[in-house]
Image 1 (cartoon, one colour):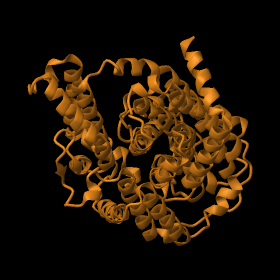
Image 2: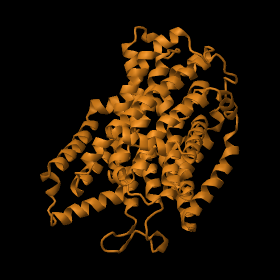
Image 3: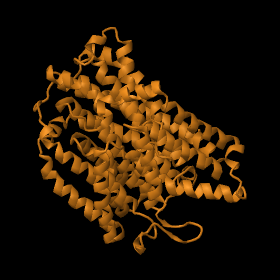
Image 4: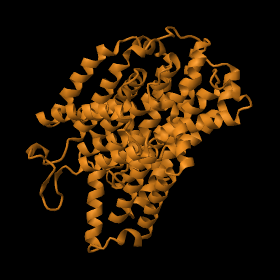
Length: 502
């Protein structure tokens, strides 16, 4: 009964006229961003963080950001199928068979299969969020400073394990993020640290400026290089209704993909991306006709699309219940909460139940909006693909600069955007994944605070982290994950999983 009461509260919050409007804006903008290759949900949400500060109501702003995230998962499949260029990295697997279906004259059916699988997976995984979030919140309320420190270590280590490219580079990115996170004033002594004598940095680096620079500006610079690679082969889409044979072939893969995505989406790092690759691998292995994969197999579209959308939804579980981001987008969501004056963690469900359950309820509504709106708008999305990126570039940059400056009206924030934009671009050239950097930056201050608090409570005894059972167990998990990813066999397999994106 308590779950039903909470859901009733959530739906009453999410169905207010204002929140329905922001949800609609979010899913439409998310789909648009997913359709336009090279921008991505992470960069977009980073750019829109200043706007959420102006919205005022935390529930409305977070509902809009959530809509952008899972809307981008839908939109990403459109470009993957039509031009063999995934709008989202998690749609990379969809391009393998989806593009082949389009070349065979079945672009409409491929898009419909992706949309149906996404809707089913989104609905089921949102239900799982509603079921598992409350008990996890209750458990998290029993955590002390030592347990939170150890939990954050697990999150950072997992993000390294699931990051693309070199493990050593991913670890370096985490360390860099942690160092950037402690810029500002010492929380206990009040002494300025790493501020370079600039008083504007006494409160630390602006999260919005760092996020917009590393993801937004860097992504724009990177995609300006590849503008010539984009061409639209399919300019008219017809035959959106899948055949009866299509329905028969996609039913079980959708269910399997939903299960895989729901489980892996919770993992910090790239759970949704990993889920799509895992689903494709499973479907190819269980198929009676594995030779069809790579030539337009229905299962190759249905499974991965369901998996990446389920993973996108369940990634909200650790963010809502523990205050731990499962991926860069969730780190940005936590940043949006902090901007609104909300302390992320288990207390959110108790102190602000309308926000907690309103976000969960909005996911159902958003998924319904997406399935109703997206298929009729396919023609519009195809036309948008023809817009040259160099036309969008100055508009995006202008809005980024205005938005960042409007948060604190601080000129140094614009300098920070430029610096971190160039840094992010340099990191991509060096094949360093920027996601662990952002996770380290978000978790750095929380990690330090809980470390020092635990040490104060233990009177300076560092064994407190291993004598408390939960803390010791979490540290053991972190150590085990780190050891496993360095094993030669696992390292080789990990490189094979992410090979499609490199």
